[in-house]
Length: 435
Image (cartoon, rainbow, N blue to C red; front, side, top):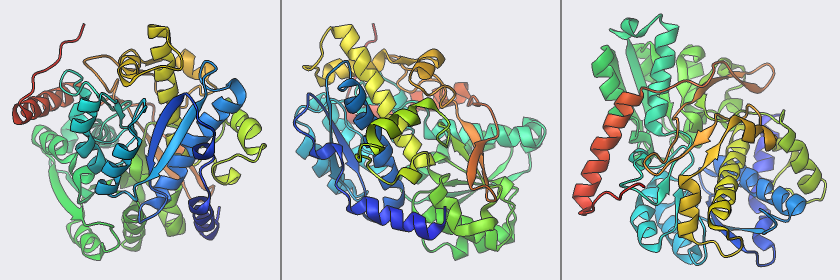
């Protein structure tokens, strides 16, 4: 796909009314906090489209979930924290779950959701220590956290250099969005640097990330062995173009999963070839569920975006988000015996008993699309595993080049326990018990 066509598609999607938001009153209310405008719309648009299309497919094919229709209600945040809080307040009545889609918004909603008893679902973003369900009983962050991602990337690097012992003396730079999101992995990387003896160079990039010349001149001067990136939106595009301009080896440049989409690499053309990113879902449409989406949604003229953009990385993230929510709803229905009168408390139970096995993924038409996801009361994340994918500029495709990799579970658990304890002390709360 040409970059010009990509931009035109973004503009078209931004102007289109969300298909599901205009449906008649339904029984399962799911607010969708999204950003189809602003500097991060390039990620927000496909994310929202994948989310909407999956629920549209369920409504058209099955009459919803167990025959109960889903009402997705979009609210535009423009990735602005205050607007996100306003969207939450305007849409919390009857909501089963909230999807902030921003770490900054998530931090503001955590105390509100605990009072309102509405689960917050943060797909691979948000506050990592929310993994501790005894401290954050209303926040869920499967299938992986930012701290997991940092550890997985270091594990991948260790494998490339012949073992963890060979990390000693290496220089690893972190280019990060200078926000709550971008700062999330620092603590983990500092701990890993202390353990394995590599040097960590921290390079913050201010919002929205268009000015990075000084950052990449420093990288050219310091010549780090590897560069990691926690970016979003235009920051990713600029970083990859700058890296290409100084001829930094792309196979030594690894972004987190929000820094590894078509939007990020296409502007750099051939210069992006070989760029790497972590991922927790596959790219492309080579899964049976996409035929169902085409038949029941796009062929009926109800697609949320452009047909040819279905299967892009961030679109597939939105689809996985919808899959996890729908499976949590099914679980809540099974546990409670309820259908159209589910509450936020029921939904919390559904999340805490969520178990999407490999067999269930296959039943959903998503065999091999993601790692199995199992959540529990004390562990709101799951396995924390991620894979590494690589961009092929010649074919214009992302491909996984590793299996799903385990993070350093012992380290991550220790850091989560420390942060959760600090949160409880700061907010004068006690941990809840898990039965």
